[in-house]
Image 1 (tube, rainbow, N blue to C red):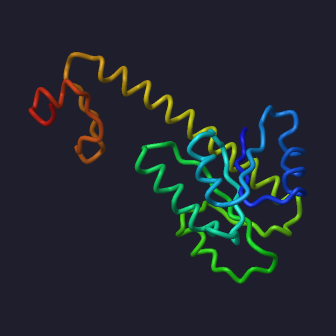
Image 2 (image 1 turned 90 degrees about the horizontal axis):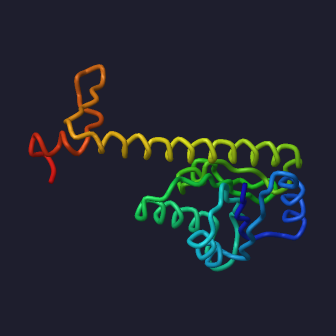
Image 3 (image 1 turned 90 degrees about the vertical axis):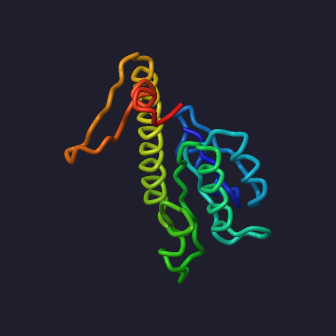
Length: 172
């Protein structure tokens, strides 16, 4: 498990390294939002922890940009946890609407932060496995020369292979 930590302080880096010890994971550090976007584009992270308040770009601006990059490049979703200031009055809805999956105060007990990190990492890893398996199944389905449709309970086509699209003139 690799965690991209944005806007880090040395204590948080040391804590994350302790959490990841024995898992083979690593902490990828980015000092600010621009560095975070560069690291996101080049390094594969299973989870992003990002401070909300940073110079140059806020954590929410970086989060929104990461979601845009994922959408444009059809990249897998990466969970993002925003670290808020102690006793922040920030509306959680604003943080979630920016594209974050969760938020936690920087002063939360270490066991709370560790639990959130491990839960989000498990979800991320499971989702990536599911996406890989779905890709494999789609490759198998498209290798079949006969047209295949999968219908939902209402008779609507939810999946079809390339042969089916060509047979009915829906693709090319």
